[in-house]
Image 1 (cartoon, rainbow over the protein chains, first blue to last red):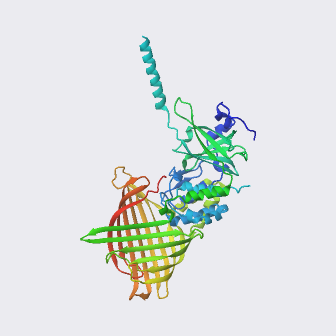
Image 2 (cartoon, helix red, strand yellow; image 1 turned 120 degrees about the horizontal axis):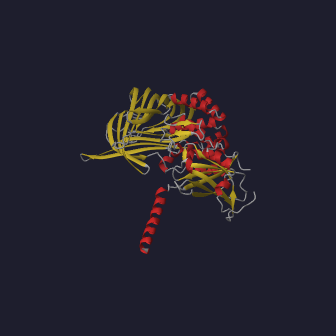
Image 3 (tube, rainbow over the protein chains, first blue to last red; image 1 turned 120 degrees about the vertical axis):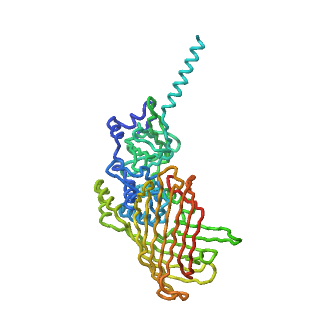
Length: 132
Length: 410
């Protein structure tokens, strides 16, 4: 990529490319389609175990109830350690490509006191393609 | 005249200054930037200190650099809000970051209020290209819980009181720890002890158990997975709704060995094989007037405990109910009720006893204060029945203070 010096003009118009691109961005970009990070699968798996969580994945981005679901812990939405094992089984089926990683780190994952965002970070890292 | 002009001019400047400040909106700062290279492209996930309304985002820009600090512009393709994460934004980058570039800086422009120019908030990170290292970092983050939580579950309570020159105490400890190398294998120690007859179950058990979880409702779950993969979100929502109507989420099988003993020193120790099969419920809503909550339960449908001279069949159930009054001025902020019951049929006599031996423990907790990540309250505990290996009869009621992790927003 050709290196350029940062310019003093309004970087935002330049960085977002054309006006058409910006319009698309401001309307909401289907980031879900572009990046698969396991977040919607995690939200769905949690919702399948507790009625305290609702997920509407027909919107983009998907909408959850509570709205800050990922800032909460699994215990906050009514799950206990026993149900965390079932959650991992559900994710193993939803994301078969990372079944080995889910099994290998089961002791770290099967705890209801975990923050849902930290669990999502694990899924995102596990779904990254191997280097090279 | 000149002094009046200066006075009014200064007053106008002060008014403009405070008007501008009064209309400016708080700009949340960037607390974390994480950058990744995925099949869909390179992107950075930006976490803010507070929720960011999508409508306030005016743009984003990025720069990447080598370790020596030579910054180059990275073209931002788009940006997007993330579901369930109002404090996060995802910025998609165009093209590939040069291999020599290890630093990424991202700035997001946010609407600062009526009549004010957008204000930027920026963050910087090291660009991670090593998926294995990212996974290790994520696992380390999961392990960063306080020690008591890292031990999987610790329930320890000790009651002590002084009554009529006698000290009355009891201990109820349930410690479970996972095996670091073997998935599904747990080690446990359970102690129930009291200092007086009638409140001393004289129960201690320690051992290891292998546990397997199996999900129920395969057809609904298969439909949910298939529609999620295909992007059929309306159909996936229907499958999800069906699952949430079910009472049971899965069943568990547990097989292990344990040592049972008398904690008060009668020197009776038994080695047993312990196996059981149970059902785990989903968590269901409870809609009491003015006090929503939830409940869940599990059943020990069938179990056996067998030793050299012991043969027992056991069954049991446990349930938890939580209610949180919505009234802000309510003195009790949260109620928790738990009950555990187990029955054992002694197929062979033990210490002259035969037949069914039952155990019931019910706890009621009322939390009246929260501070930081802890909540404080009172706990009332009822214990009735008997436990192996001595099956000493217990009938006690205990009251004490309790402090627990709040389990809410970090």
